[in-house]
Each structure stands twice: as structure tokens, then as C-alpha cells.
Amino acid sequence: MTGQVVRPGTTKMLPVSHIRVTLHRVGSDRAGPLDSTRADADGRYAFRYRRSGDESAVYFVSASYGGIAYFTPPLNEPLVTGENAEIAVYDTTSSRIRIGVRGHHIVVSAADANAQRSITEVYELANDSSVTRIASGPAGQEPVWSRGTPAHATGFRVTQGDIPAAAVSFKDGQVLVFAPIAPGLAQIAFTYDLPASAFPLSIPIQDSTQILEVLVEDEKGSVSGARLRERDPVVLERRSFRRFLADDVPMNAVAVIDLPAARPGSVDRRYLVAVILVIAATMIVALARALSRR
Image 1 (cartoon, helix red, strand yellow):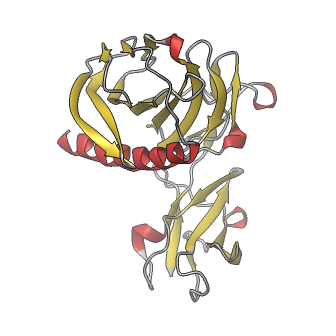
Image 2 (cartoon, helix red, strand yellow):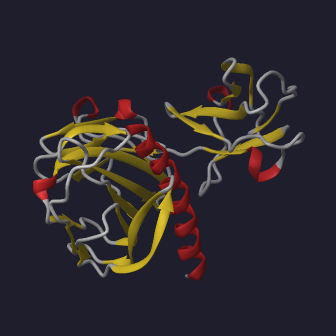
């Protein structure tokens, strides 16, 4: 494969002495770096490698710039060149540049045996600048992005997404993200539990959002506000969810989820993880369609 390290939006020469690129392999049988080299004066690099072992193993190339790691997409072809082998690196800033919300997805599970409902929220965050936003303040104590959760939320956990759990904390009802967010889209997903008595639940939309979607695993109840309209239900992992969708939701709108005090059921946590994976994939497709319409 042959590729190039680039700095979008600048014509400055790459500091060659600082740009090292590394070829990685991640598979069920083994994982780790396979080779590394330095990019030339134009940021170009090349690797030769042979696939082996686990057929589902993923190969990709990384580069570190300004203390931040950047990656190529997975290398799926025998010969990879052009955009698929390009690594875009950016200068960093701790200034309060805006991190917007392209998509916000909320899934509400049926009540479990303890009369608790699991709530999963998936965000598509957008950095529309030309620099990577990093945590600010003394020792990076000011988060890059934050979002509130409902009162009485417990059992907070980060699930699938681009942002690792180690870079996210939950304090005083706030989700705090300290991971760098590069230009483009980054996905974060987290789950928490609420007692069934917490409904009706009001969820303020704290930033203008292109796509807002709510899935409810309950035949009764209602979802209103924030321009939400009910659409055809969807089936995920053999479970049916009522689906509510809104486009171009303004900041400070409020979505209200009103569910009856239904008889507790049983929710398998492994099933919820599978649902989150499906949500992540469908959200990306929905965002792509919305952007193409524009």
C-alpha cells in the first residue's frame, strides 16, 4: 500500500522528524503493530504486508501528530492507495470551538424485573473547524464536550462509539468527554438506568440537532415535543420498537417521553448491546441520507 499524511487547510510543510506512521493488525488471534516508517518530505509512505491468521482481522495505519493519534479506514483491498490510505492530521487547540450535534438517538427499553428502564443515548458529534479540540484548563480538567442526564439516573456506562470509556466520566448528572475530537464526526454512546416512576420524562435538546430519533419498547404511551412524529415501528433483534423522528430540531426544544407504569418484564443486557450496534449503523445511514438531501 502507498499513502500520504496530510494537513487539510494548510500548505505548511509537514515536520518530517515528527511524523511516524505505523501499520497495525487487530484480530481475534493476535493484535499489535506490524511495521513502522517515517513519511518523506511530502508526507508519503509505503508498506508491504501479507494477510495471515484470522480472516476477519482488521489492518490499518496510524500517525501521531501533536500528541494525537489519527488513523486510516480499514485496509480492505490487496492494493490500497489514494483517499483510503490518506491520514489527515491537524493542529490542536484548547479554545472553546463549537462541537455540534448532527444526530441524537434515544432508545428506551421495556421495564425489567426491578421496574427499571435502560436508556441508551447515541450522539454524532461534529467538529466543523480545521483543528482538533482538546481538553482545556489546568491539567486538561475542562471537558471537550458535556451533556446532562435525567435526575435519578444510575448505572452509567459508556457503550459502543468512537470515544473510549476511559476518556468519559459521569459526575453530578453530567457526561464529561475529555477525549480529543478531530474535525469531522465522532460518535459517543452511553447507557444509564431510570426507575419506571421517572416517566413522563422530559429531555431538553441542548443543541440544535439535524436528526433526533426516539425508539420506545412499549406499545402504549406517547412521545411528543421537539418536532417528533411517529413513524413505522422497527424491529431490532426480534423486538419491536415504536419509532419517533424529527429533523432540524432547534436548541432548547424539549422531548417528552410518557410511558405507563407497565408490568416489569425482563431485559437481557446482551440484547441491549446488540441493539446499540444496530442503532449506530442506522444512525450513520440516516445522517448520510439527510446530508445528501441538503
